[in-house]
Length: 290
Image (spheres, rainbow, N blue to C red):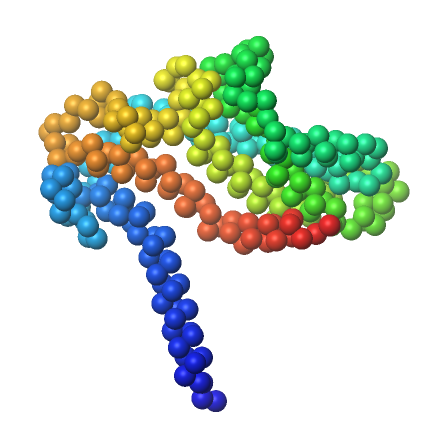
């Protein structure tokens, strides 16, 4: 069957448009990577555009030898793992009872949670609360204030509402408690939404820098995002990275900035393809079921 000229033209336009979007999306990250592995003097002379000039891994080797980078990276991993675990436990334990029609006061508590999506106490009251709780300059200042996201809780509650209630009723008849029903039935059936919400929380913790900027006073506790901000925005680097000589003489501050950006975004880029199918499925089901 011969295709019409209009159909061929339409497909050609779509392909060209999609390729353009792919290029626009991919090229900034590619350019950052190219600059990070190029010779520093060539970067300063503006000779690096699409292909790397004098490619080498000196910048990454320098960063991986810097104790400040390693320490801040380890802090970020710790904050992300602990924060995501706390988020998921609190979100699940909040969403599950609110998904049950027989839960007394369900509408009232849901309204209270939704209210926080539109109104907050503000920065100063939040800081005073964290200070009174004794969490300033601790990891918990980055975890506890955002233990539950109202939007993520609503998405998870909507998913729980779509699960077959007959299955849970039969388990209760057999003597299962609500916690046992949640652990043995609800959670195994909710892997797509759990993966999705976990990704939301993990990315949020990984990219977060403002709470650390407000609540943390010691540089030893800074996440890598604070270090990235100091390097990119304020031009600050650790003493070891500032004293470049010998094999690192060709490494410039521009190389370091771009290499740190790559180090920060690399884990998210590496993890996302493996959970993409759960991510898409969880968003669709969690948004549409009711």
